[in-house]
Length: 120
Image (cartoon, rainbow, N blue to C red; front, side):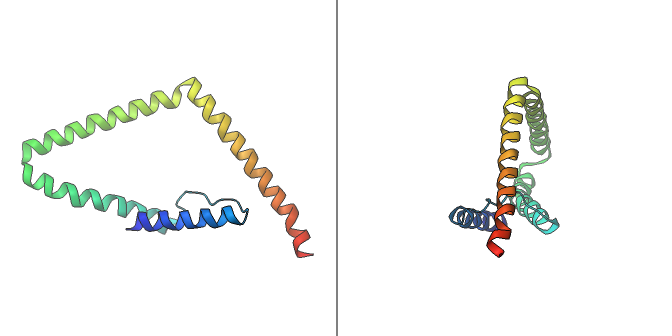
């Protein structure tokens, strides 16, 4: 329920920010409590599914399952490494990351310039 609640809260904040022309909030969990809550909530569903499964399938099937999981995680890591080091992908990410950063910086400075006028 915690990830769902965090997602709904983020959606509401994004909709409110869109209506008021403010910068949309970051979709990153900030702070120790948020990160810990998401981690526990994400791991709890795995424990609730895999504990009964491993309990009922036996030792040999559990070892095979763990081995397959390890191989597939290694495959995901290999794919991530290959994609993350591919020249065209890194150029694409860098181009859009820097343009996003410039847009955020321009928006922040424009908001800072408007703030004193609104107060005075």
